[in-house]
Image 1: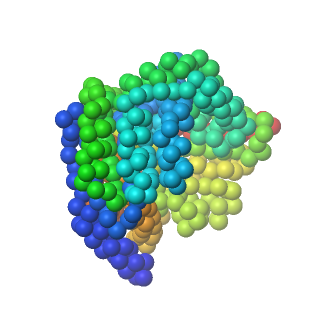
Image 2: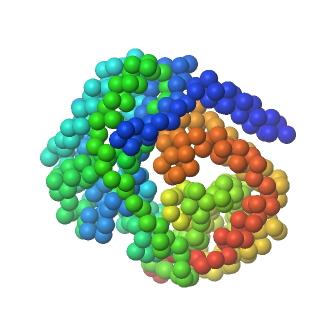
Image 3: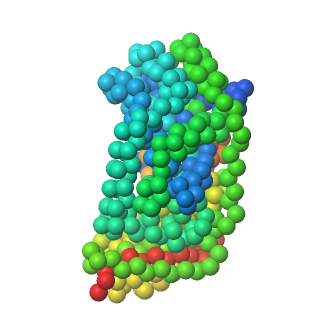
Length: 422
């Protein structure tokens, strides 16, 4: 009861702040979407730019170009040094469905930062030495993955479950592809990336109307470009698959088991998010209690369900002795197919409280406020979906969560096992 009261208080505070902020969403003449949320009580400013495409802009010949290009571009800029000297943060990244540029700064320095942001976005420059250094660092990271079983296992699982679909590629790239990348490849990637029709620009915090207009003018001058098309065909699992891979440096096995899960615009998106928390969201989850507490199999166990533009995966994972793998797989199957035996109102309410509490607390920062708005807009849910997301979690019933389990955890699956050599 106390937890429900706490969540209600958080909701009241959060939505009160939203109504005061008066968020707006406009589409600029060049096609960029601008989302603004004035939060004058917080003397900082955050900007998040998401550009649709992500790993879909790469192929098996240039895999890793997005990560390398963005990191080199960021570190070559004067903007990075000035922002960090002023106590702010500036980052770029390439993810599965989009590329991200983010900036957070005390609002009193915004006038100083805006001209540097304009220079960064309109005059693409990558320093050759910085590019070569970032390339060297990336290759070191890729080689190190072979000695990091957890990273190797998830990377191998993604390849096994997505096959030839772009999500199978690691955004970091592969050693053989990164070696071939040039500074010209990086500059061309950035120039092709900065097309307004694929861009969502989200701002939150304390800023003046004049500053907003200057930023709008900067974004409006970016080339319109063409809508980037993402095709989701063949992103589902069509056949059962089991892949085992030996590793010389591990004694216990790492098991990943994945099912086709809905994209972010699907009506089952929220029920499956709750399902993931109920089954594998921590020490009170069903998987933890059965596979670790009761059976004593696991040193780590859980589940996750990433938000994706195309078919995602509902992934169960566990670290355990190889001799127990067969029973662990059977246990995962049993729980999914007979969810009504394991899932009840108490477990669902606990999961809902955790999800809403975590999201609401995160969104109190300007960066996360701007990030969520851009994220949901990019996924096709709309920049105002945050409000609906919270209420959808609150209003999802136990029966809907059980229905989602039976629907998604009984189809074709991919199993990947990283095991010791002996």
